[in-house]
Image (cartoon, rainbow, N blue to C red; front, side):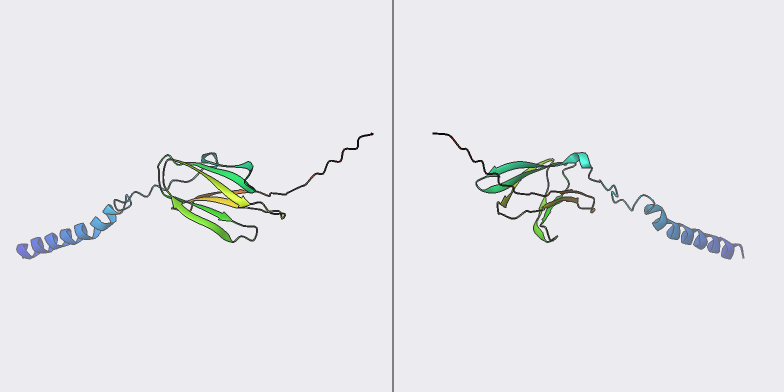
Length: 138
C-alpha cells in the first residue's frame, strides 16, 4: 500500500510540474521581447521646402533610435495610398516631390512602426497667383 501511495504522489507531483511549467514560461512573454516601441510626435518632422523644378517639395525626417523597421506612407486628397515603402535606420531623411499643378493638393504623410504605432501629418497646398501691374507716366 505504501508503494502505491508513493507512486501516486510521484505521478501527481510530475503532473503538477508539467502543467505549471508552460504557464511559468509564458509569464514573461515566452522569451519573446514584447516591448512595443511607439512613435512620438517629436520624432517625426515633415516640412514644406518650396518649389524646385516645377515640383512641390516636402522633407520628411524621422529619428528612429532603435533602428526598427517602419513605413512611410503618403496618401492623396482622396485617401488613396500613392507611396508606401519600408525603411530602417536611426536617422531617416527623404525629400518628397509632388508635381506642381494648378489644383490644390492635400497630401497626408504617415510614419508607421511595425506594431502599427503611427504619426500623421496633413497639409493643404493652395496655389495663389499674384499679378503686379506697374503703370509709369511717360
